[in-house]
Image 1 (cartoon, rainbow, N blue to C red):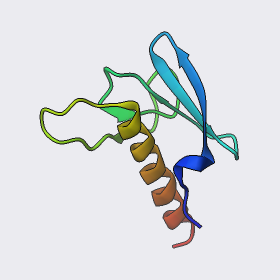
Image 2: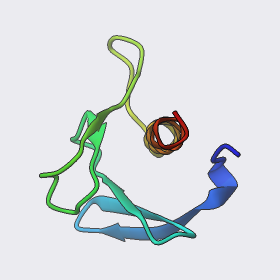
Image 3: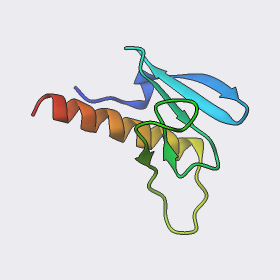
Length: 80
């Protein structure tokens, strides 16, 4: 099994911070000023860098891609 965008539930934006939650209850956060995703709204824990072309603008789509990459890496590590 791998995670896909349909597995993420977008819970909106608060003070510029966007939130997605998996069906299992794991939350991920992103703010347009962050170059990574975070696993808490304060941006203090378990960051994962967002990959974007140099000079490119980071979007919610990039954040979703980073979240899915993080989830799938965690899933792979659990099965290793």
